[in-house]
Length: 420
Ligand SMILES: [Zn+2]
Image (cartoon, rainbow, N blue to C red; front, side):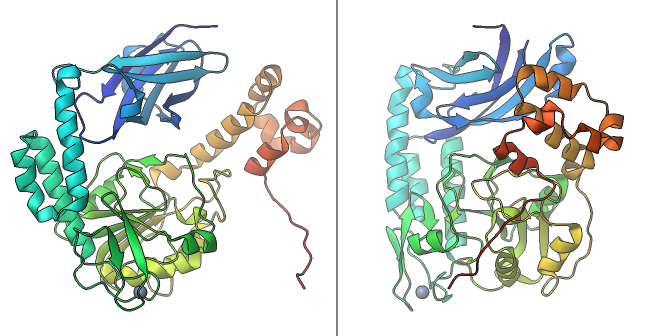
C-alpha cells in the first residue's frame, strides 16, 4: 500500500569528501512517519516548524537528519526509505550534477580515495602539498588541512589508558601507537586513534551498535567553543555532531565519521589537566561506572577549566545500547562535587518537563494496537492525573508489552542470590 508523501533534501548539496555524509531534509505525509533510513541506518526525526508554516494543510511534517553512504547511491541518486505505520516509500534525491557526483566526477572521487589512503599513512603535515598536487577542491584541501592540524593537537594530549603515561610525540605516520612504558599497542583506525581494546570493551560492557546519536550544540556549548577557540575541548560521548569543530575532540565508543578518539568514559586516554573545557551531553546514563567517568573527566580538565554536563532524569529507557543510570539534579552535582565547583545548575530547554510527558505518552502509544492506541490517546490528562488506580485494568495498560513496560516503568525490581 502506498500513500502520498512529499519530501525534500536540504543536504547533501555538494560532494562532502567522505564515504559517509550528512543527509538532511523534510517530509510531508498523510500518515505519521515512523522511520527514515539510509542503508540500514535510521535517521533522527525532528520537528520542522519552518516547513509546517509553508504547508499548513499537511497532516504530518517530519524533519530528518541521517547519514548517507556511497553504498546508498544508485547512479547519482541517493536512495532512502520512509516508513509510516503501514507503508514504506522510497525517497531519492538526484544529487546536483554540477556540484555533486555524476559519472565524470568519479575520477575526482578516486582521487579522494587515494588522498584518504595517503591521509592515513602519511605525515599530515605533508598532506596539504599532496592535496594540492591532486588538484582537489579548495574546500576539501582546507578541510583536510584543518583535520591534520586537529590530529596533531590531539596527539599531543594523548596518554596510555593502560598505564596513564603520556605518549611523547606520536608520529602520525604510524599504523599503531605503542606505549613506551607498558608496551601496549593501540591501532589507528583510519584517521582515528583507537583505544577501545577488547579488554576495555569487555570490562565496561561495550557492544557494537547501529544506533546513531546525532546532535547539534546548544548556545552555551557554542559559546564555550568560541571562548576556547585556540584551546582544546573534550566532548566525552560526542555522538555524531552536525558540525565538527577543530578545537573539539570527539571522543566516542562508536566509530562515527566524526569520531577522533575511540575509548571508554571510565578510562580516558588523555593526560592530566589538558583540556580547557569538557562536554558530556546525555552520555553518563549510558556509562557503566558514571562515578569513575566523572572522576576521569575532572582529571583531564585544566584547573579552572569549564565542565558542561547534562544527563537525563525522567527519561524512558533508551539503550544505546546500554542505559544504566538516570539521575536527579542533585545526583549529577554529586558526581562531580569532589573536583568541580558547581557554578550553575538547572534545566536546559531540551530538558523541559513537557518533553518527559511527550516522550512517555508517544512511546506508550507506539506499543499499542491501533484501536487501543486511539482509546489511550483520547484519555484526558484529568483522567490520568486523578484516576490511575481505576485505569489499571484498561487494555491500554494490560496489553502493554513487557519490554515496553520496562522502557516506561515507574519502578523496576530485581530478586537475587549472593554468589558463593
Ligand atoms: Zn602504557
